[in-house]
Image (cartoon, rainbow, N blue to C red; front, side, top):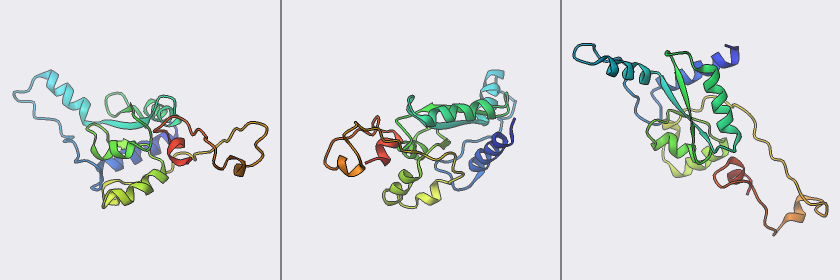
Length: 170
């Protein structure tokens, strides 16, 4: 496992142990063995260190990044990251706050800023861990468009609704 992957695994583990998480923590203690079937014990053990990572839409980069994090961080039965296909990085804020099974999320920083006005005390419910990658904007135009000002008042496309580009672009 590379240094970066181990570092990300430690950050995810710290986030889950932090008192300022979006949802109440799951009970990570294994249940006592008396009177509990072996299947229930296996279920409890596997779920204790399973982390739901909200990624985004299938066509977006964040879900691919979430898949790579899972591939590198998964450690047999000790820790398992489940990448979750969602409605996009902007909606991942809602998923992290309210959706069962979402423990961490890839979120665009500008959408998190927007939520600060909508959700009181969001800084106490979501812990910002790390800037994973910069988001770039590439603008492709027809030959007659020479500058961004030539696009003023015209319809433009910023990708699929719910994607980071659709949120940040306009």
